[in-house]
Amino acid sequence: MSTYWCSQAWLPGGVVAGVRIDIADGIITAVDVGQNPSGTVLSGLVLPGFANGHSHAFHRALRGRTHTDRGSFWTWRERMYALAERLEPDSYYRLARAVYAEMVLAGYTSVAEFHYLHHPGRGQRYADPNEFSHALVAAAADAGIRLTLLDVAYLAGGFGRPTSGVQQRFDDGDADAWARRVESFSPVGELVTVGAAIHSVRAVPVEQLPAIVHAATGRPLHVHLSEQPRENEECLAVHGCTPTQLLASVGALTPNTVAVHATHLTAEDIKALAESWVCLCPSTEADLGDGIGPARRLADAGVRLSLGSDGHSIIDPWFELRALELHERLASGQRGRFESTELLTAATAHAASGWSTVGAIAPGHAADLVCVDTDSPRTAGADATGILYAATASDVTDVMVAGRWSVRDRLHRSVTDIGATLDTEIGALWQ
Ligand code: ZN
Image (cartoon, rainbow, N blue to C red; front, side, top):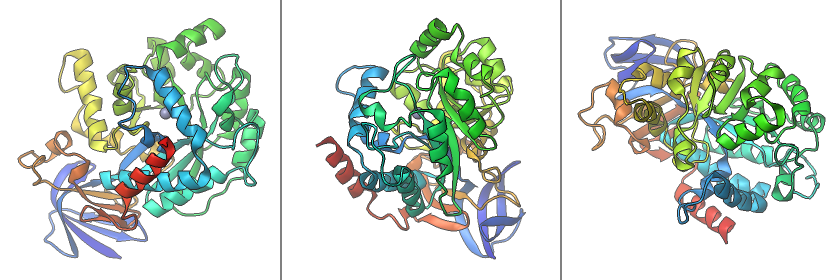
């Protein structure tokens, strides 16, 4: 057993001083408040580890490279396809390892990888058809982050259109073939779990949806939903209903379902999502000009919220949780739309990705901890809960995942060449 003493820690009831945390086998066994220092002393403020609820690791290679022309979501997608054309399992492993290490440095202790790059293309298959999935599992293990590998079904190039070009790298043919491939994948490791995903109602024909929902029973099921008005318009034209209603009609909206973005919703859509999760990705939604999702209305309807960094134009959980509130302020003209505890709950919603006992500093929960410097040029002077409005990824000093330190004194303990690796790998992809 290991004992840590925090000068301040954010417990389920709020920030408390003098907290002793006992940890055994990666699990918090006791939390005692008002204690004198003992064991390893953790300075600053200690919070539960953050959850990255939506990631496409390779999109990190687009950062700072899509701003020279005005473009749109759809021109951005062309650049993303150019990358997807070039990646191979070994290059994706090297890139993802550095991207996941950047996440851990920022305070994320789990990532839900929405993984759709499966095949060599042109209908070919790798000797092991889960080669890319294995590469991502190895990358996450090296980076010391929990991974939910969401294996994505991507079977169409739009409503009523087959996949073409690079999209064939994503395409298993049909839902049964997708399910067989997912079934044959069983990664080893205590920090990895497998879930399922529907890319979107654009990319999966409606008759294929029930088989995916069935195969996902008991696992997280994520789906991109209504990120762009065009998806809604096309769905209405083809099916006579919104994407949310289409998913509801095939039983795809369960307590394990996470609708990603959910930006453009009707009042009926919000009601239909009440049992499920919505994962907002504020930095990406701003970067792509998607719009501002109805976060407060969703929360008021009982929808559980989580947060993701998605396209990785920024990897910073503090940015995402602040933007959840700040986007609401911009849209509503009101401050204080979310309480600080609500922001932290959304930012630590590991349960949306299948980790039900991660995300709180409490006995029985996993020992995933983040220490943030309260005396940095950015954070000094903020009050304890106000740290959510002051800190950035640069202020994270230490990160523990399942009782083991992945980051100590602002340095990743096993991936020491993050910047250089990103520079090399991203440079090679764009050559
Ligand atoms: Zn996405």
